[in-house]
Image (cartoon, rainbow, N blue to C red; front, side, top):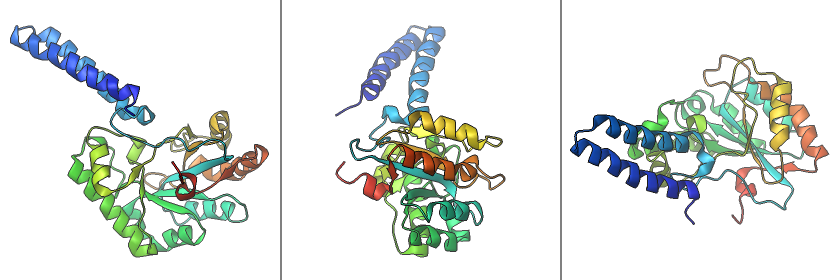
Length: 261
């Protein structure tokens, strides 16, 4: 089923594109610019709000009715902060998904093996944290994903099948690139904004707590993009796990979470 946002994108491409072409033909550059800017605004909305599925299917929630959520962590692995997250999860019934960067995996394979040994799911977040990822051509998107998958498989023997793009941004080129790589695009329905330096654990808990419902996919960070600070989710995690218990929810890896969807 085509999403309403995708239909809006098709309609705006046809309508605003026609407007711009006709305006150019009539020698009306101002009107042509308005058409182009309007289309750009619609297209950018789809990039920044992936759950709209403007460019194709993106999984932002799991099935409700199972009292389950999926805690996910981006930007690792890190030898200190990722291990702290694993230590917090280890004595509990909760398991998570880690979206790792290929270049960090190659430098820290032992940490990736620890994630796998802990019973967690491993996805990829790109080969590096490319902030212009949504502008890359499909073949480059595919190649970046495959390099990251190769790194994880070399370290653990397991090939990832889930992908969250850097910054979570998707575009006209991201979706076909992911399709070429054979991975499932993952978004989120809840986030802690802990990728921002200076964010407090209390603020993370407040943000996640408002949207932590059955079927939620929660986006957190076990490492900073450049490994230059500790994401607030690391310290917030014990309290967050207690909040899951209070609400009768269990976090499971995405491979289990999405069975049957």
